[in-house]
Length: 447
Ligand code: AMP
Image (cartoon, rainbow, N blue to C red):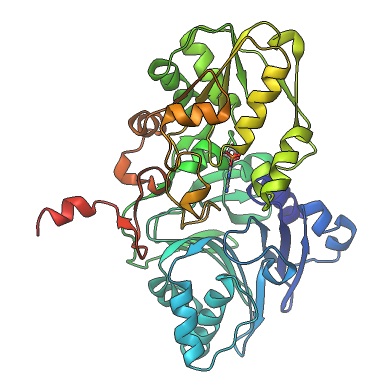
């Protein structure tokens, strides 16, 4: 039941499918489509008892949104059962899959998790040592991965060599656990202990979280979009509370992109803390001028563009008493395609706003993400081939301003060399075919 509650706490990270695998004399699992409480009915979960377990909520980047790709993925091997839950993206998955196919392996799903679990099963079969097998497979994979893994009755948590996606460990009443975000431990009456280090493998034992040396750490490249949008504001990621970061971004935005206006209106929920910071620094009053229907899912999770625009209308309703006749600063976390913001600007105009100024808590998204955010092609981005002024026109806004890359990095409070800024700069921490690698310029200058 604890895992189920944890999945509900992490529901914002994925709403396509959910699943749980537990160990009790072998691994038993349950998976379903939709939100955790739809996918896993509480009365059914009660029968899924075990001494330990893992769970997953899915937001798809690679592989279709279907039951076949729901996680945890479970496989049985000679050594015992294996279950795996993965957040991230393996950039050399196709290469690995093709190499394995040549050896005669067949694959049942289109996702990259199956490749990982098959490689693991194979390695464990030959070495009989799960920790060593995990380390071996980590050394084959390139990309981002925060993984929880159960090999028979042993539970592991591992993070890629740059720590691109978040992962932390903590203690609950039941013992040690790992989760994508610290908020799980706060809300389940547990205690957050620490982040899993880049390239670290941790075994969760009844009385201990034992770190296993892998020697694979390569530095840091934490995804900036976690602080901007993905994570919950009350989570602390790699030492930085998301709420504080968002507020600092908003403050910085007010300094970099000031405007004469009457009221700061956040786009709920994602723009709220940024808007708070903007209001504090600019001195313009903050008002919740858009009401949100909290029963409609996060719009980005809807894979189809058409769903996304109707989603906006279902989700937000303007408060005329706040908006009518006023000059509004609308603050949101980011613009990807611009569909959402264009609709919102029009909603606010229709509610009688005199002027609508848009301020955005991240720099323009210009390049695809290969590491776990579903932003795959340049032609979908509002910023592709447009100046900021042109994007503003497309949004039908009176003005548009983004926070700068430097401003964002300062607000996060980690150096730019500790962050993945790939979608902003087009330079990535891990080699991706056809793309520039981070710090490449520096290395080139030695040639
Ligand atoms: P858009 O309409 O594409 O500009 O998106 C608007 C909102 O959804 C912003 O808050 C974005 O941060 C978020 N968003 C858009 N696309 C994605 C995506 N693929 N993954 C995560 N968040 C997204």
